[in-house]
Amino acid sequence: MRKIIHCDCDCFYASVEMRDDPSLVGRPIAVGGRAETRGVIATCNYEARAFGVHSAMSTARALQLCPQLVLLPPDFDRYRAASRKILDIYRDYTPLVEPLSLDEAYLDVTGVDRCQGSATLMAQEIRARIQAEVGITASAGIAPNKFVAKVASDWNKPNGQFVVRPDEVDAFVAALPVKKIFGVGKVTAAKLRRQGVETCADLRAWSLAELTQAFGSFGASLYRLCRGIDDRPVKPDRIRKSLSVETTYANDLPDLSACHAALPALIAEFRARFGRARETRPVHKAVVKIKFADFVQTTAECVAEAPDDGVWHALLDDAHARRGKPVRLLGVGVRFAEDDGGAGGQEAQIPLFDALPGEARGEP
Image 1 (cartoon, helix red, strand yellow):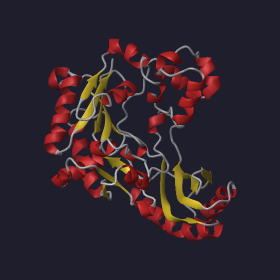
Image 2 (cartoon, rainbow, N blue to C red):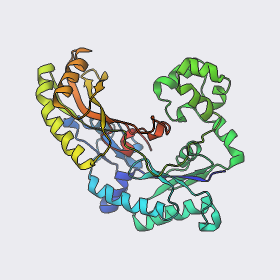
Image 3 (tube, one colour):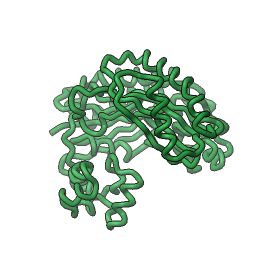
Image 4 (cartoon, rainbow, N blue to C red):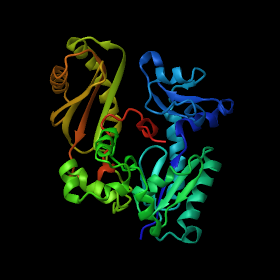
């Protein structure tokens, strides 16, 4: 039986900002892009959330909901410095640390002797050290597997923790809304709701065959997770499967020619990032992403042996032709060849166009 801790700092970017500028404490603040450049909120503190502001919301909308919102530009150098200290604390307890973002990670503490072997006490000690040594707060979930631990870490936020013991897993998961299952977004949740499925207990009435027929390969994950079954190990070395950059433009690019004119600057930014990454695996595919003015999004990709300007321009033609409307966002990237046939579960996949890690994904 594993002992898994999921640690997640509370509104990480905003917490670092309040730590470094105490005058911000108690005021609604958010970290993100400016409204005039169509920025989005990466994260906000709990004072801002009281107004309905949340991560991944447009900055313009956030300012409508909370006119007194203090908007701060992201400072990733400071966030990465805090992240390194946090990861050092995690690794002081176990080498089995699987980072999910700058401030969030799974820890497998099975068999660890610290704190009399109690995962609960280890989580308390880790959180206390983060507060003392980094100056921000963190929450934690403790459970026999990754899925339940991640859900549990959100249970007593902020600055709290929650334990789900092995004999409590079944009842805990049965009561969860299906949207708590990793991979169940708005579309899947709505599809299940139309079938009368609101909770994991409801979903258990579906057979594996029925779920596979309705949701393809994801059906098998639904079948397991709604029963609290998650055998994935904590993997210290998560492999980057892709690399990309994207830009949201202050003014829509009106046509395909304007998109081609904007592409070289984006490619130059990508090449700089690609050089810093020092990736040794070969490139397998080139990818172009477009978000049109009506917010419809599409990606075009093809097999490619290296980042190539001509391939990206050709993919841009293909993607743009699907809608032919003005464009608000462009992205270019690559996918790397996989050595292991793609094994490792869904969470090993790093989003191709993850412009702001961690809380920009909409997580607490």
